[in-house]
Image (cartoon, rainbow, N blue to C red; front, top):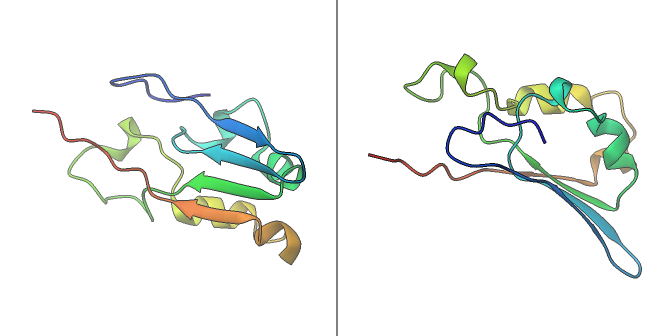
Length: 101
């Protein structure tokens, strides 16, 4: 998965059970840099847990262009024209960022 790899690598998971499936994307750069379409991927699962650590720009005392997380507003905009069924699969999660000194 595309990620700034500032301190570590990151992964996403597709979890498949006997009757249900889930997509877990805890940390990612902007959705458009991923080689997959997030809307299409959400449609393939029963639950989607997506990174929404930042509502919009300027939430940290750092240059947000160097921390390219998808803002909550960007994620919700991607799904605004999707069906209620698709939207109801989405659970927005917040990444806890460790502060390194």
